Each structure stands twice: as structure tokens, then as C-alpha cells.
Image (cartoon, rainbow, N blue to C red; front, side, top):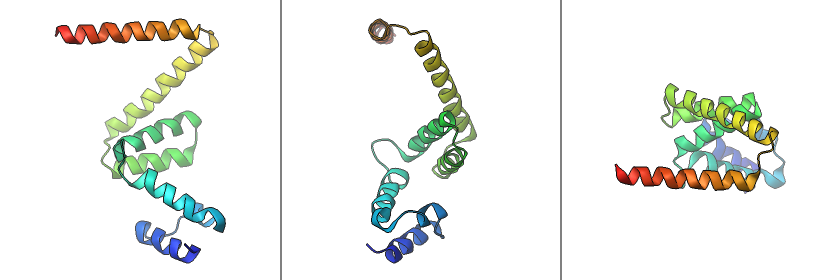
Amino acid sequence: MKRKKIYEEIEQTFGLIPTMFKLIPDNTLELEWNLFKKLQLEDGAIETKNRELIGLSIAAVTKCKYCAYFHTEMARLFGASDEEIEEAVHFAKATSGWSTYVNGMQIDYDEFTREIDAACEHVKHMQLQH
């Protein structure tokens, strides 16, 4: 597909051609646009809103203001509430904090996975009793 045709499709989708697409070289524009549509705009195994909340969480951890803005607005577009947005960011904060701690303390990975497996089995057992 030629750049002009891809731009027409992008403009039809967004009402404009975002600069980020204008910077992509001709030889990868079609690939990048098709991948963007697939991952950002179409439902998949993970509902679009939830994928955007995941994207926001990643953006928060990587501290990318562009990604944080994009994924926040896309999450809202696909129905995320302010509470869901805050929870996604809070989850990212907690996960990155625990990651820092367990990696910094150099906890034995095999022991860690055994403990998590045992904890999950315990929770399953408790759920079956209720």
C-alpha cells in the first residue's frame, strides 16, 4: 500500500494524520499502521479497554508521558472510568515496587515460585470451601 492510501485510512480513522505516523519511513509504514490497528483499535483475546489499561500501567512504569497520555485517553474512549485508570496505575506502582524489592533482596527464584504455587493452591482450596 502506498503512503497516500495509508494516510487516507489513518485520516479516516482519526480525522487527522498524527505526526508519529508521518515520521515512519515508507518501507515500514504499512506494517506499523496494520500493527497499530490490530493492537490498539481491534478487540482481541483481551478486551480493548483492558489492553489500554495495561498500556497505561506500562507507560507509568517506563515514565513515558506520551504513552501515558495516549493510553489514558484510549482507555477512556473505550469506557474506562477514572477509578479503573487510577487502579491500573496503582497496580503498576505496587508491581514495580515489589519487583524492585524482591530483585534487590535477591530472593531465590525457585523458592519464590514454590511459595507462590503453594499460596495459589491454598487460595483455590479456600475458595472451594466457600
